[in-house]
Amino acid sequence: MSQSVQGASFGEAAERYASLGVDVEKAIGAALAVPISIHCWQGDDVGGFEREGAGLSDGGIQVTGRQPGKARSLPELRMDIEKVVTLCPGERRLSLHATYGEFGGKFVDRDAIEVGHFSGWMQWAGERHIPLDFNSTLFSHPLAAGGYTLSHRDQRVRAFWIEHVERTRRIAAAMGKSQGSASVLNLWIPDGAKDSPVDRKGYRERLAESLDAIYAERFPAHAIEDSVEGKLFGIGSEAFVVGSHDFYLAYAATRHLFLTLDMGHFHPTESVADKISAILPFVPGLLLHVSRGLRWDSDHVVTLGDELGELARELVRSGSLDRVRFGLDYFDASIDRIGAWALGFRSARKALLAAFLEPRAALLDADEAGNGFARLALLEEAKAMPWSAVWDECCRRSGVPEDRAFIGEVEAYARTVTSKRAAS
Image: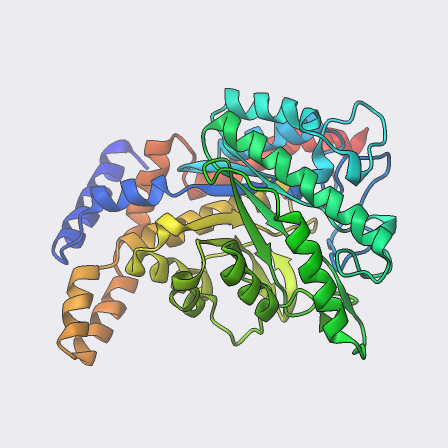
């Protein structure tokens, strides 16, 4: 498409939105300004680099597919992330798991990791102006193989994992201080049972005690934002999850922590969007793990569907984005990893753009007037507006490929980079 045609399409779209009272320039600026945290674990199938041959072995997580060309080292992973960044418009962050440190070819157990193991990441990210977020890693480890970590009956096992999370908090705080932006430290544990235990109360009491010990150490809010993540069920924890949504909702509210809402961690009929206004009055903030579950928490690549669209609209309508953090969380090895990585990011950004392009003032007027018909008609009109022309303009201004060119960029990287890894 020629530049003159592109300009005309965007200009016509802007005029149509203006007729609904929408300032397209403000919408573009607002949509691109929301930071979205790219997750490092899509690049190597959640394997990490703490030991030779490391990878998923337990903990209720499963990566499907055998697409060749995954990152086999930190330099390859960073190369892939740098490519993904060139395909993603708007503000970006990077979320690391604790198993992605630079351990110098030596095995460093989880209770011994230090800030120095991530100084290379901090330098790399600082040079590229990409703030870092962090995650404790309480899966794929012999002391997680029994299905319990922070709620384990054995105090020695609990002590190991408490030490691990305490160290990840110190690392995240160091990241936040270094980059001048609080690092979001997320905590998810796989603890649970395939069949119902008799002593549910005991497991949850132990988890609460472990968490209280972990969060006893205080850090400045400008350095770290602690968040806890619940789940409906997992592989091997179908009947009982110690850290359920109810548990962590109460814990976050009483301990003044962020609460993580993963879009795949609820019953398929539940609306994560509806939870925003119900929870935010009682917690400092929310971390959203943007994922797509099909039938179960399958972590499919994010696409622009009804659930994601409604979530973005609720955040914009309620003015809650200042207290909400966006992070991607999916892993798919059945299709090109780079394409999957960037496609999910772009879908999340599209949802935010469409939400900012909604005729909010007119919708509020109809709402306040009790005019349900006008409100519904406006919502339907908004769906048919030429927002794709505005999306193309977002990509152009960000220096990233538009949708049609995006496919070619991914395929070219596969030909020149990842396919050669597979061959070797």
